[in-house]
Image (cartoon, rainbow, N blue to C red; front, top):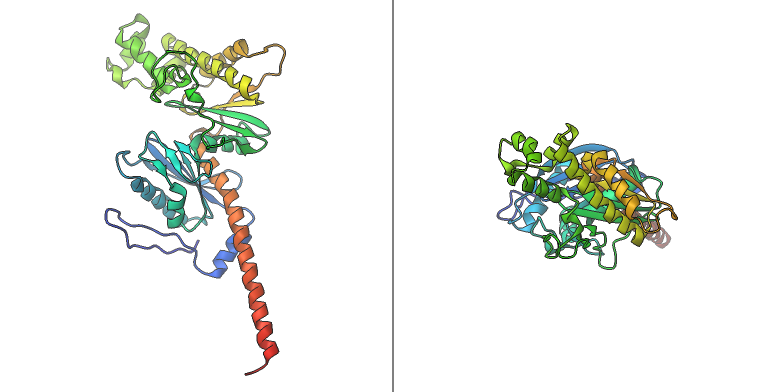
Amino acid sequence: MSTYRDFTAPIGSRRAPVLRTVGSRERRSHLTAPRVPTVGIDIGGTKVMAGVVDADGNILEKLRTETPDKSKSPKVVEDTIVELVLDLSDRHDVHAVGIGAAGWVDADRNRVLFAPHLSWRNEPLRDRLAGRLAVPVLVDNDANSAAWAEWRFGAGRGEDHLVMITLGTGIGGAILEDGQVKRGKYGVAGEFGHMQVVPGGHRCACGNRGCWEQYSSGNALVREAKELAAADSPVAYGIIEHVKGQIGDITGPMITELARDGDAMCIELLQDIGQWLGVGIANLAAALDPSCFVIGGGVSAADDLLIGPARDAFKRHLTGRGYRPEARITRAQLGPEAGMVGAADLARLVARRFRRANRRRVERYERYARFAEARRASQGPA
């Protein structure tokens, strides 16, 4: 895309780039492109991933950087996003940008109402970025973006009622019905991790007790392992030896790795997490009755060590079991790039509307030019 950069950066920023189309020929070619590449951005607490994605969900190029410290102003994160988009646009014909943000996004998909790992509070992210990147911008929750990607290109293809559950530090989720993400009245549907499953249970960061993510998430897995190690339990000797006594070094991926190597305690911990996962899925099935549950997020890398026990617990706790069809439970296929791919694909829908609106403007201008030419011809020479 033909661009220029505005180097008149405000104080405190190295530059404030502006992405603009130059020339009617370039603009018109964008309007008539049937399948266009877009940029997807996945913003988490530790990383910002950006990639150019084609209409088939293929990643043409991917960039990754650390998320700026959350104590900094929102503009610092916005600057990082713009830098990544500008970098990618130097080598690709970018038509729209989709943002998958780890936080609550309003129903208009403009404002990030709250992001626990960033300093976004009622932040008009879409409008701010659209003002700096003269291409359409779409903002959505990262779990919604990941679910869309799995429905379009991954494990959820062909499903008309799908629920995605993302297991990471906590639990996120999304609902798709008949090709539409269900965001709720205020845009914050799918926060499954904060369903209370144990009254008076473990305290959650949200302020409540007994939330589902306190029993089936990466945090829950690591907490249980550290508690056993701190108690010097005989079953924890394997992991204590692995971290050379540094209990604070225990991580979720480490537990999964040891479980794959046959460590009995780590296998049991993943089974416990999986059983709680199955209980929560059974509750969601009672409420939503989907045809498929897709399990994503970092903890899902444990695969059958986690999903096998989840399927067993789901069958035991499903309301009306034995007398109703059972939803399929499967692991996500797109891995950590799902949020980025989904955000890019959702942005492509906005790009189509954007191109149609601009095509109508072009057509109106051409009609006016023909009218003006005919009028000049009818008036004859001056």
